[in-house]
Image 1: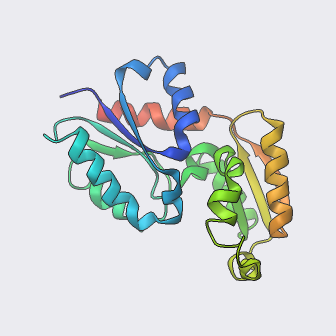
Image 2 (image 1 turned 180 degrees about the vertical axis):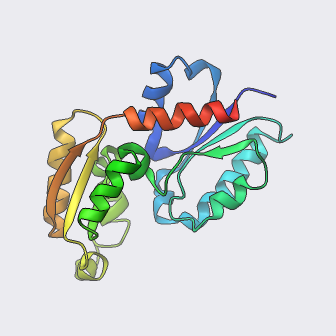
Length: 201
């Protein structure tokens, strides 16, 4: 088998690099990224993954880690995984879960169902991915349609960056939501990445 291939969401670039470097794995895996704005078009994620697999694993003989959870694909990523045992993905339904860890995320979700979540990346790119991505810059009257059932915005931060917290709080204010900040760091994400890499190695 060849060098492990990691195909990951572009929203994970900083965090994945940090984890791979911390665990001395950066030189032992081949990492490729898909555009982060596929968050808004989850139906395109699996076709894009297949295209990368065709280019970087044409013989189908490399162990592959998909740097995605389900990510709104409605099980399409898992159907791709079912085609070969050499394919594995990160655990959970979305990046909020593998950053926070399942117990922490489930507690937050159970405490308040109407919660909109941001990671560091999504906070930094809130305007492009959320405000403009949903067309709210052109049609702010749509905000109640998208966010009328939400009550709070939770930032699940990875780095200690006060600028990200300020940006996320401003996003909550723009959406008319109560703001909470939970610093989760990278421990749960590091565990998810290293354990999944062991499965494919």
